[in-house]
Length: 206
Image (cartoon, rainbow, N blue to C red; front, side, top):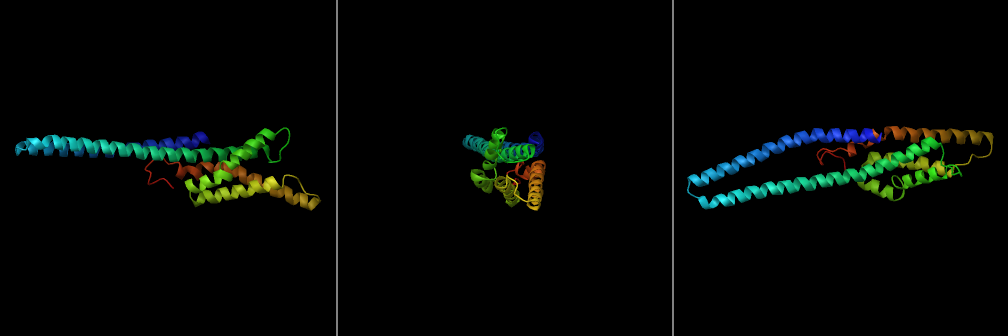
């Protein structure tokens, strides 16, 4: 799924890159034509002294635009990397819990449960919760609140209760929690896709 989402992001980036490249070529060409026209007009009117200023102004404009493009791409890439880190940790948590079928720590699974706990605190709990609030919108907030609810239940109900009916209710509730976490893992790529968009920064959710 990691490869799937990265592939989607790269496809979007290439698609948007072609559009942006075409638009850039058009406007750069237009600027060059305007500069040439201004230089020719200056020569014909005998204002030779203005030609260097015209050329310098044009070069400055092009350099400024290149700097703007670089800074915008850097902001976009930084945002993608921060969001990608949250996505990976969320997927790690879901995959580990789905594989183990529990958050109860034993001698055999202690290392795996520790990794799942760390992944939870790096995505939808602890510091991860605060980062998520800054990097994503209400849809991901709701998903993470639901994941946190299931995580908390599994953690606080790791042992079955006494009594047949209580044990049956517990088993059903545990099954529902594990099913939700497993489904969340499969739904993550599409849920995160709007936030991993490589196109125009204005089109990417924030």
